[in-house]
Length: 86
Image (cartoon, rainbow, N blue to C red; front, side):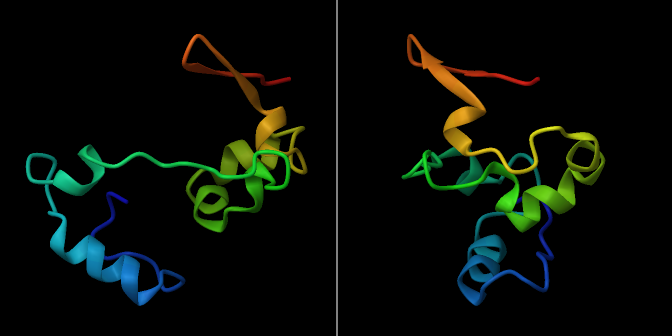
């Protein structure tokens, strides 16, 4: 969300959030105060998120895990998410 201009695919709601949450690192209060929660790790594919796929296109194109579920990408260990890349 660091791109203040947003993307054409962003909803109007996200564009408004970006406009009011600050444009620089020091005043970016929104990103510093939110937590992202993925509700169903057993139904959501990790790379189905288009902005993620676009931002990390080189990683996506080299990944052997293109169709893997979020829950298969890692696991919680003592309240810390540990990634499983193979």
